[in-house]
Length: 310
Image 1 (cartoon, rainbow, N blue to C red):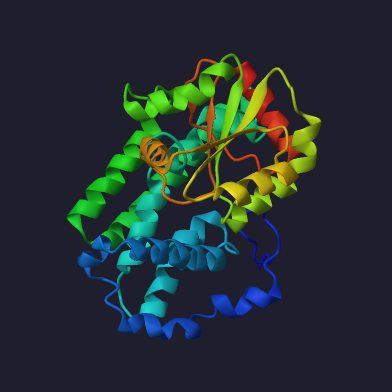
Image 2 (tube, rainbow, N blue to C red; image 1 turned 135 degrees about the vertical axis):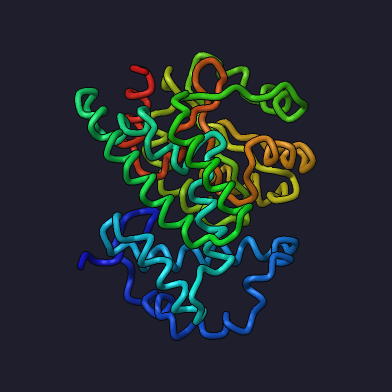
């Protein structure tokens, strides 16, 4: 069996984290109202769901993709001592299959995403067929354990949309949030624009910025793309923000905007956690491919070259 991998950087899981994957340490969860739908009204439940999903998924990453879902469901049942999926896992799956512009099923079977992962045009048809079959099989396994008509309908919707939508970009709606964004990004039209939503308090945000600093500075003033950093005045206090930007984002395109405007952008792009990344094409449309740039310089440049050919 392969070594455990982390999902973000694909590195071997450190031994120091092994205790977090020991289900014996999660017996306390059985005392919580984890299957109560009223939990959906509690904002912190979503943070719990995200962390829970990562534990279950990381432990299952050692298995072949065709086995992962059965393994995850069985692990969930073992953790809670039940014979059906818990509400946190159901929501985790709905989030994973969710599409609405990027990620989920769409990103897995999207032609642009596959080109970015070094499939040749000649290989695409066969690979797409394999992936569609795998997505449908995985969805059937998960749906069989949902046992909730609303969740089953949502899963069908996300899978159908992801499989049938072949568009590579989407246009932002005509609204105040889009106007706020355009005031920032219109000056970069004609380039691919990578938006990084971050905050000075966010450790993962700072890590990503600092680890990519050297190669981003090498590529500064590139005619094809621009990195744009957006935070709010509430999440990044003025003095802390100015000190951090001077040290790590000096010369970069940085915007510290009013909290009210920032919240409108989170609604526009449908995100609640950071770091969060988006990418615009040269016409200002939102790209549906994986928009992070944390993989490194070579992968990022390959993404740009692939998108230019589309």
